[in-house]
Image (cartoon, rainbow, N blue to C red; front, side):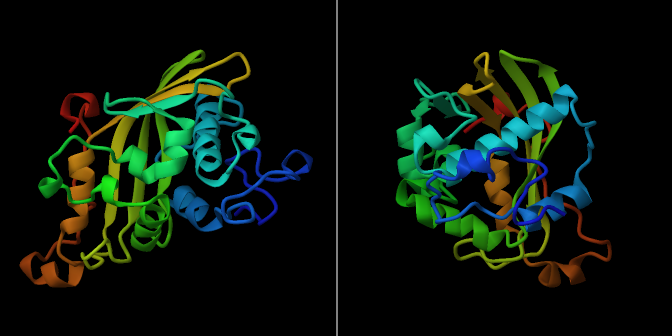
Length: 242
């Protein structure tokens, strides 16, 4: 397990280069709990120095910096000019737009009418969005790279995101089961491996619907079998975007 002074899966968190970094919560985040979940349940263990391991480190580092580093100049994995990110082919957002609305709200953007939204990112702040998912996933929301289809400068890869709903999600009680989804991402990087553009594709609807299942205790009498992980989008997420 990583200590508070290091993180084996993320770069640019500690050391001389981070002495002047402005952190959103006042200090570097501690990923010990989610790293434990990742190590216990990952389906791939990539050799150090392999392309897959490098892409996974870049993904985790990029997510950490986008969420926790306030100033663009402190984000060493993100291109300093012209960065954008999009989800399911929707309008790309700039770094300032993502910072203003929060990473979860940017990632969960949707064109669904408001009355059909299980989670409405347009009604959430950056803080409330983060709080919602930290509450639902007290052990964190782990991510792993499953396959890398192409290397830089256009890195295409498949990922898996998962956690256990052991806390409430909005008005929905915790059911204790695993919530996971699969997706594809394309990172456009420069010669220094800084992300210039990120394009995510995944099945948003299935992911959010999985929070609505009944608690395991309530459904136990209906089935003698052990509860399976909740349904996730294992097919092509591009074709089923909402």
